[in-house]
Length: 111
Image (spheres, helix red, strand yellow):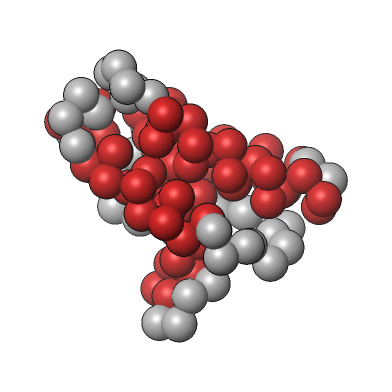
């Protein structure tokens, strides 16, 4: 995996997720954010970086929409296409996903 900075979009897996969002029809983007978060949360085995990094990027998109979340704005490697309004039920899912990524049996936590 190529990582060039510490931001949520600054690695190959997260940038690929952002590109996939850009390539998807707008009506599918919320579901893609939800799927990235859910994949991490529901993984009860070893969470590799190819699942963890997109979950962090998706969580950053959720956080960006919250008050004070400006520093989670997509940068040059985040999605360029607009992501529709994200439903509020994604906030607790995003928190759970980040907790999972930072927990045991997670490659990103080990790195």
